[in-house]
Structures are given as C-alpha cells and as structure tokens.
Length: 494
Image 1 (spheres, rainbow, N blue to C red):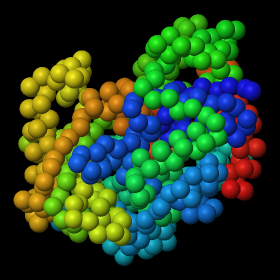
Image 2 (image 1 turned 60 degrees about the vertical axis):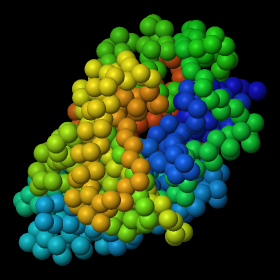
Image 3 (image 1 turned 45 degrees about the vertical axis):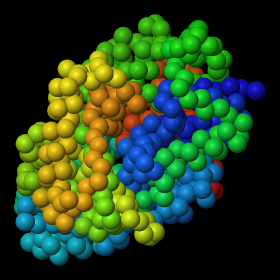
Image 4 (image 1 turned 135 degrees about the vertical axis):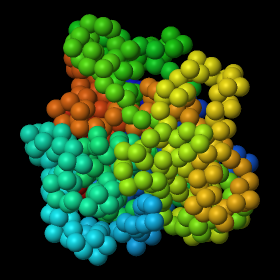
C-alpha cells in the first residue's frame, strides 16, 4: 500500500490525511504536542474549557464551502453547530458608536446604507466589487477554474485603497475594515482579496461548534484512526530524507524512519525547509521564505466568570478605541489596549451554565516577549510580571466597557506569542502563520510546492488564514498530487 506522512496535525494536516486516505494511502500524522489540532486545541482548568485559536466558523450549511468540506471529510455529523445572532454576529465598537454585522450580504448592505445614508452609493459599489473579488477563488466556489491573473490583482490590491475609491467618510472606512483582526493584518496592509474571501465566509452564516475547535480536531483524528491511519502525538519530525528530488522518508527526532510516497507538511514554510537538505530547494526560494514577514502574534486572555455573560451575548465584540484603524492595531501594553476581540462561548450554546467563559485577543508584538524566548519552563520573574501587567490591562479595558463583570472574574489566565510558538511551533508565535498582506500575497504568496516533487505544504503559512483557508490549502496540495478534478467532484457530491 502507498504510504503518506503528514507533519503537523493542524486543520490542514488532518484534512490532507483524510483526503489521502480516500485515495488509498496508508497515512501517519506526526504531532509534537500532547493533543492534535494545532490552533484548534483547547486547554482545561477544573473542568472549564478554553479555546486557544478557534472562536467561530462560517459557511457550514449544505452547498457552502466549509459545510461541503466537512461533509466530504466525513465528520459533519459528528459536530453540533450553534448559529450566532443573525442580527449581529459581530459587534464593531468604536468611540460612541457600535455597528452590528448581520448575516447575509443583502442585510449587511442594507444596514450599512441605513447607518450611513450619505455614502449609500459608494457602499453599494464597494460591496459589489468586494463580492466580485471572490471570483478568482475557484475551489472556494467549488469550480475548477483558477483565474491566476485576477487572483494576483485582487490579492495585491490594498483594502484601504479599495475602500477609498468608493467612500469618503472615515467612519465608514473603519466599519468596512473593522474585522481585519480576523486574519491578523492591520487594515493599511490588508489584502482586498483575502478580506473579501473571509468576510463572505462569515456573512454566509456565523456559528460556534459545540466543544469548540477541539471537538473538530478530535472528530478528524478519530476519522483518520477509524480508517486505519495513525495520529502520533509527542512525535517530532527531525528531517525529510530526499533522493533524486523525491521525499523517501521522514525521520523522527527519536531516529525512527517512516517511509513515504507522499509527504505533506503542515508546518510554517521556514520550518519545512529546515527539514530538507539544502540542495532540495532553490537558494532564491529559501531566501524569500526567510525574508517573508510572519503574521502578528496575540495576547490571549482566558476568563472564568461567575454566572452567565449576557453582557457579551451570542456574538463577538471587536472593540476599537479610535476611528483610525492603524492606531487601534497598536500592541497592548501595561497601560492601554488599542483593540481587543472578545467572545463569551458560554453564551453561544443554549444550555444554561453557572460558569461563564470569556476569551479575549489583543495584538502583541513578538519584540515585547522576545527577550524571554529561550526560557520555557522557567520563565524569569520579569516575564511573569510583564504577563500579569498585560492581563490586568486587558481586564481593565473589558470591565470598563462591561462594568457588570466587575467582581465576577473567578479565574484569569493569559498567553503570549511565546506560548503560541511553544505549542504550535509557529515562528514568533504568529497566530496566522504568514502575514497575509498585499506585499506577501498575490504573486508573492508562498508556494505550496518545492523542487521535491512529492512533498507539498499546507496551512496558513502557504494559503489563506483560518480553518477554511487551511482546508482549501489541503485540497489544492493533495489535488496537485492526485488530481484536483477528482477531489472537486467528491466535494460537490458530499
């Protein structure tokens, strides 16, 4: 039987594993952590679960992109989806103003025009162009075509520039790009095409998953194992054995040799290249990958609340302290928070609970924690003090906006980019791997292929961010090896 080794058990790796199993491959997935899933995984404290990287999903209905993918992978029926408030699944908060993003393009356009009637014409023309920008993404629309030239154009175009072509009111511009934190790129650098793809994904219907991203990762893992595959935890790939520009085996850090007819890497490209002999890649490609800017990191806040959290409700909050999107994206510091994302997953499910959970994300630069990068397991007091001061700053901002939370926080923990890097190996703790900016997408998008003909890369480091983006990356990568039309046909019929 043909063998495949998948390095990394994030959504892209697990998706690739199942697609290869469907083609008759004997699959082994290697995961260095104690739980599968990468950014999908949870941690637990006294029975309370906290999601680390997954917060919500979109387009899960039949015929919609993520829904079809989960059906094709055979895990859809294992999952329970809870729709977020269709009248406002995301609340964008600005100084003295809040905008609730409703489900559906028509409702979204109508609310924008009602809120800013003086910009109605520009809003209509901008949204029409935004919807048109999804056309080059053939697989997202479950079509075989890929208009490379148009893809280069929409991904290289700046979001702010595109907005400025249609509207003049800076408040409208701030609302239109207020969700850019969804993929971790400040609006001034954001790609018009990437923004269009991700916004459409959520406007089709935002929802949470019972059990969070961890439930999705476990469902995919069980599927692989039921099909005879292996998902090996606490196992790290040390190198890929290459001969005649073909990957022959993956060598683990313990020296075990796993033969492979196909190798899929769900690691960031920088880490993947470290596994390959130098002659297996072109010098220009190695230089480019090394020079690419990784995505931004975040400061994660995990709160247990006494009682329910109706203050946050069945939606997410994007809180901006300024109408200037660039100013809002400055990193959290011990004295102020420019931007935070907050969500209460305990409010996204119908079952009542006596313990609420609030999750927060705030931008945090790697440079802030880089001096402590080599100290895992014995972090110095200076790092612990910094982490506590940032946690206090985040909680102060949250309670200032939602005073009824005061005195109800039972437990508070935090993570920094150092935490993310340790558990996922993402360079500099980048939440979305690659920085999906105009300067690094389009013709500068990292390639999923190298000179090693049977090795492909998947994940946020080589495609679009989020569980949809990494799933699509797996279809493109495996499709390159075994034929995309066959995969596409199965996806449509799922």
